[in-house]
Length: 318
Image (tube, rainbow, N blue to C red):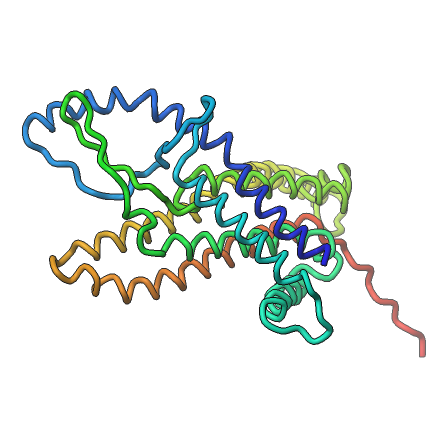
């Protein structure tokens, strides 16, 4: 019960963790809107018509008390709240023989636990399951909710004084916003540092990065020290870029999928309801794969740093 509730509480925290990133991005967008409108004034005057498409950045839809709220933030909050409510409902009346929502929730959580245990081991699962399972469920739900008709397609036009028109969607897929994916990646980066320090300590952390592996003597040992020092520096650069790669991979795939569905809906007039249907099934698969990729990459990154070297088994004398 506690594990499941903690799992979904973190889903809400992941949704809220993107606030500061979205706020800064939208403040920048607001300050640059007038410049973009002026730059596109000549196009509007010449009769250039803006194409209806999903903007690359989330759109601010409200600013209560000076706090920017974007369309993707609203979707992420709704999903996090919905997951918490469902988890509370599924675990409210626990039965020895599960049925209905409890049966589905136990199947999902138990399946993820067994799957992760086969990859990173039972010890790390006990410490890290709350994050990996939460991030998988949250990302998968966000990806599939973003495919519901109306998300990213219902909105309004904003006309500026110079005649420039800009279309703004009312709702936007949470993972089609780089602020959200970057927030989740940075949450993992912070958790990864904490887990690494708890498992191997500061000295073990540095040894894992820079210490030579294997046994050697003489000149070969000196050479290996230099080689592994250089490899450790490259590994540090790789670690620092992990949040960037994790966030852009998820954002790029989801944003591209939503734009592809919109393009297919407008490819042939009169068939906008039919052409996207096969691609919807593909995007359902892509949403599942991307959730698995994010979870597995973060789990493997954790395993590579937190795994303990097992002592060689002793051979009994005959």
